[in-house]
Image 1: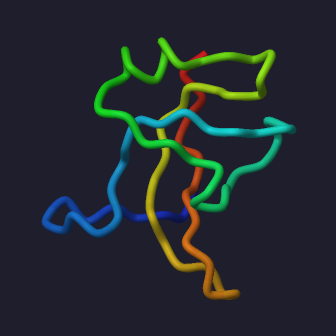
Image 2 (image 1 turned 135 degrees about the vertical axis):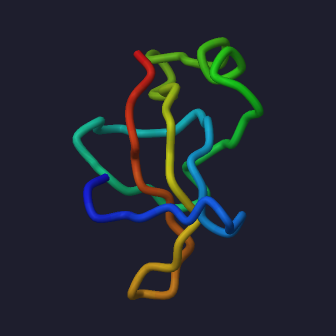
Length: 79
């Protein structure tokens, strides 16, 4: 997502591979409970299941929203 800066010296907010539950792929941010972190891109691709609305992605986070929720921002869909 544009405007999100990742500090390479910090492990608080970083780019990670994940499987994201997304009823609509048009969103750019997701609540923590919709993001399932995995170790590698291959792991994310193995869990990708459009029939269940689970999509492999690279995400940035976690970050705190203005509402106080932990969220992840979409960096890119893998498929």
